[in-house]
Amino acid sequence: MTNPNRRLALIAAVALGTALAPAAARADDTIKRPGDHPHYSVELEPHLLLGLAADNYYGGTGFGLGGRVSINLTDNGFIKSINNSVAIGLGLDWVHYSAPSGCYYGYQGGCYGYGASADFLQFPVVMQWNFYVAEHWSVFGEPGLYIWHGSYGNGGCYAPNGAPMGCGYSDTGIGPAFWAGGRYHFNDTVTLIGRIGYPDLLTFGVSFML
Image (cartoon, rainbow, N blue to C red; front, side):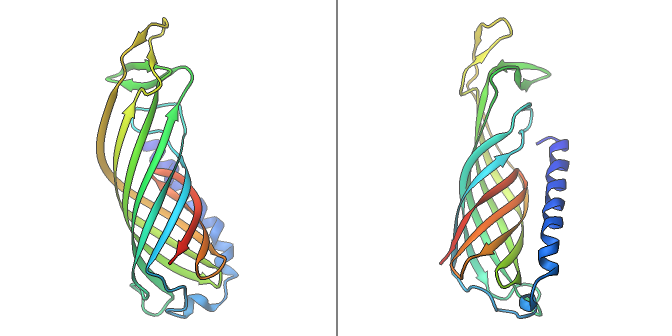
């Protein structure tokens, strides 16, 4: 991502924290009771996602879907006096970018294609630090990294005069990742879950704690 997109992701994360602050302020004393939260071995999470424009890939917002598997490491986290836990999260996300017209992929200062598209596979690996702030609410932070593979020009590329031009370009890389999010717990097994961060702006789905 470009630096402006990183700033946008940071702003979004701050906005999430601001939105969660009133709920935390009204929270009961669950946060003060270490271990008083759902005890599970694995959390399974299918989700939808909204992505920011990738490096050199201008003018589009990505949409996709994916999932996470979070393996619980401990029911008592790094701060023993509060209600927190730690898990490791492994994911697979697919996100698609497309534009009907305009220069959509920049290459070496020029326009590589018109009307192009791109698909990304992302494999995040994160540490998930959970805080149980109320009976039905938990929040978390997820620092880590992600491996990505991008395929560009799947929809066909065209020059400004309408002539077709070759596009089948792909690349792979690795980068830092961070998300902040929260859950609404319907019960000890099923939650609504959302997160904001980098590289994806927003994910929203459900999770099952087993």
